[in-house]
Image 1 (cartoon, one colour):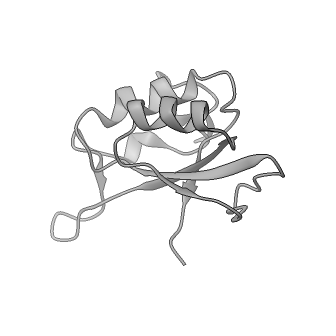
Image 2 (cartoon, rainbow, N blue to C red; image 1 turned 180 degrees about the vertical axis):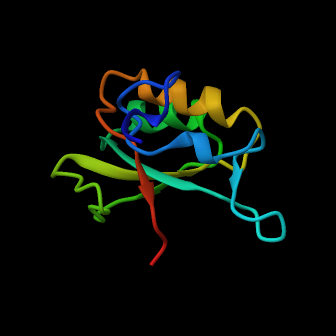
Length: 107
């Protein structure tokens, strides 16, 4: 479901309803967190703001990701396997420069 479910902003473009309260998904004997990606301006202020919200975030300069970061942007990859993952996603989605958050698939 696009929009992340009824209580999530439309910026979140994956179904958060399949995640449990701990941010995990899958069968009981194979629970795992979900990775997500988004683009931010490639500058120190944006990176600092995002890192202050999401302790799991990793920046990948030069990689467009599946989301397609443009020149002047940096790919940010986070993970739902952290305390307060719902609030983290909501706060990221509320940043004026985050236009879409997609599920990320490690390759």
